[in-house]
Length: 361
Image (cartoon, rainbow, N blue to C red; front, side, top):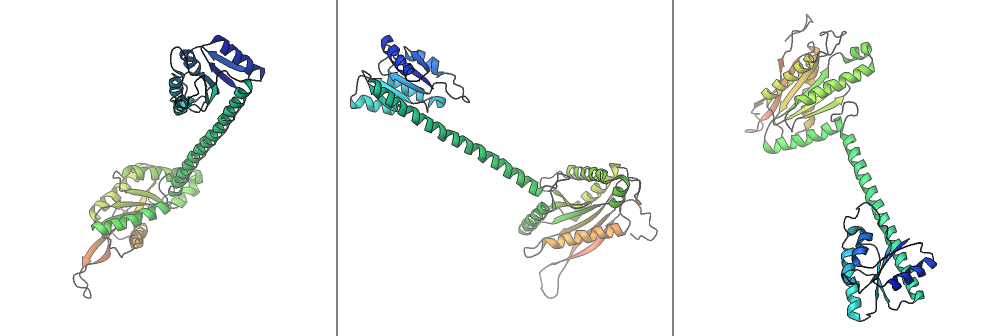
């Protein structure tokens, strides 16, 4: 426990230091002026992360270079020293002087001449207060640290909750959430919404030939390529499950969705990932199902997923490595004049010619 005595009287400093050392205060520093005290306290350039060496200050009110009350105020203005107790030593015990000392931040005062029993009692009280303040500050720091750790953990859990662990892109849960949001937004603003469903062709054969570790690498590579192809902030790529991926294309009509789907098919093929046991060629390819709709407020986003899934099924049935597209058309139903009804009708946009003889365009 380090105590600093600030007094311009050499005899007073020596007597106080001797008294404190005799009662177990092993580290006692003395200063004859405020400047010396400021140097010992490191008032200028105090380390923000270090605990002050000096635990309590006995400060005379009358000093040659600065009034002790003003010195107290300046010490208390330093954040690292704000909680260091300062006991004013004064021969002036009038109410005004004491009030100024307390206003400056002093925690107590000792009247001159100092009575040993009173000084020691008041010093113990100040140190007990300092210890309690230090404990409270430590609890606050611990609480801040724990709160920050919990925030970081929650952020990480939130991130993991929406990301696919294997590929690092959005998972199906996040896809479902975003699709519902985009459906509602498109319904409000009356703009089309498109969806791509993408399946890696003959992926079971790939795993059987190269092993599941290589299969995982293939999934990560395809996911990364898909993510890189989407340039607009509103486009969302997600892993739907297994070797299936989905892409939400907000504010995208049929023609734009068809173009994106064909770019996806070509980009995956151009990666030239070896797939020696694929009936559709010697590299990894994908089949893509596309659906576009103008959402209605009382409609279901699930209908868009079902349409894209059916288109994907048709693309796979027709030989794979191709795009199968459902285009939205409109007709006026007889029962509800003036209200358009969406009807999904298929249209094929082929990739390379299929090797199956019975395939039809």
